[in-house]
Amino acid sequence: MPRPLWSGAISFGLVTIPVKLMSATEDRSVRFHQVHTEDGGRVRVRKFCEVEDREVSAGEIGKGYEVSKDTLVAITDEELEQMPLPTAKAIEIVAFVPAASIDPVRLSGDSYFLQYDGPVAAKPYVLIARALARNTKVAVAKLAWHGRERLVLLRVRDGALVAHVLKWDDEVRDPSELAPKEAKVTDSEIDEALQLIDSMTTDDISGYQDEYRQALEAVIEAKAEGQQAPKPSTEAEETGGQVVDLMAALQESVRKAQAARGEDGGDAEVHEMPKKPAGRKTAKKTPAKKTAAAKKSARRQRGA
Image 1 (cartoon, rainbow, N blue to C red):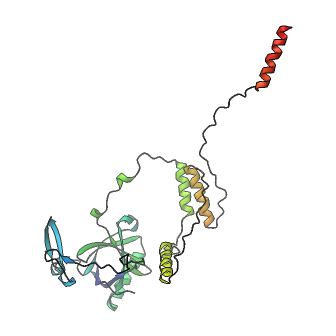
Image 2: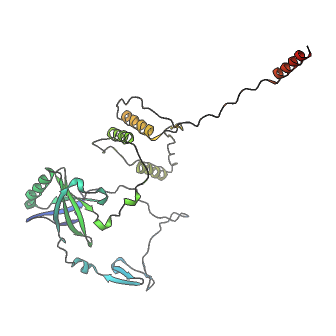
């Protein structure tokens, strides 16, 4: 496990549980350095003081808040550490809520494991973990960390407590204006969409991999060995250029999802878009020779 990032205690009513906070995830993204394209030299970022016009070291750099244009208020680390926050060294549980009531958009993406700190903390740690595991509720708590107070969600994963950082109410934008107002769908289309959801439902997503990162690592490995980068795959699913309606697309998607899972979905009904009506056919013209012969016969009859 990685080294602890924070140490304190969970405050659960009158129960105190000493814990250590450590990252629950790791970033496996491929990182690049900036280089000079002409000679491959590293491009470095140097920090200059605009007043003295000289490079400054990390020890000379502090924090400042812009209150107005060209006006900064300096804030020291000591002032931040002395902020009167009750959650400075504690994860204070403020409420328990149904897990389904937490909007996933509020999850910031930062997740941490909580490890009990010392033998005395083991029993209360297990107590709250098992209590949470026996119902559908999660704990909402406050935590002061890195110069700000954060709202966190506490839940249980394999017997261990996990903390997920949440966005505050005023950090989530209102999406009400983004939904289409005029589009209409039928009950049959909704039922077909539900069938597609059922056919794609799974209890395990552990098999998915970052294919882009794998391809990028293959490119880097090839170039590091002086070889040509591998060519991208040109295989693409044939669509046939057929225009289908929404219901047909749903039915075909259900069939493919069932086939991918080894299920016999049968033949899906594909509804083609109605074609434009063919133009009106014109009556066939009598060949010119027949018309001339008919006129000649008529003249003979008149002459008789």
